[in-house]
Amino acid sequence: MSATPIVLVSADNRLFDNVSWHATPAQYVEAVLYGSGAMPLVLPALGGGLDLDAILDRVDGVLLTGSRSNVHPSLYGVEPAPQYEPYDPARDATTLPLIRLAIARAKPLLAICRGYQELNVALGGTLHTEIQDFEGRMDHRAPASDNNDVRYAIRHPIRVLPGTCIGRILGEGEVQVNSLHRQGIAELSPRLVVEAAAPDGTIEAVRVADAAGFAVGVQWHPEYWVRSDTASSRLFKAFGDAVRAEAASRSPGRVAAE
Image (cartoon, rainbow, N blue to C red):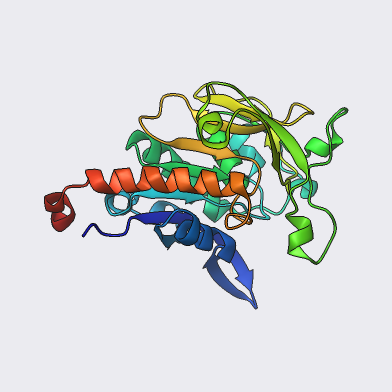
């Protein structure tokens, strides 16, 4: 019997009750377990203290989560300002090198919201800090509510481009998604290809053009509705299929040696 594949899940470094925590929202680890059929393993945001090569030896995929924090502007050539906060430099120091190494090692990679923005920055792209301030752009921020079902409600269309990875998974044409972000892609990394966009031109999905395996990012939040929304379910199933293929490629001898 083959072992259950393991997916590495990025974590934030947060302060709760004056104690520093390495944490990730439950919706991501649950989506890995129930949507992809893999075992989630949370990676602490310890930056250069981690041996990422050794960690990637032992896992079959990487999920980059969303977060309330933003990628630090200095990492893409913009001056920091209070309105762009909060930041999480410990997470930045962990996820950006993780992204580059995971792609180099052909580990399946799914990047969501902040993780999607990290993907673009890690590969040389830049971000708009507050896209709702641009003329002609819709407000992509979450509705004001204490009810997460309202905040994560599926509420606007995206156009999936033909001949794309996302198109093969979700189907080409129009797909409805949710929206909870302030930042967005400005200059696209030369290593990324646009897979979908919102009606206002905001890039909503990308893939890594030179990746040897599954490596895609989405600006919306499929993890929240993975057990009830068809498009969300399909995306996590496709990620799970890629992760299982990676696990199957790891020979028993190699696993034993690790």
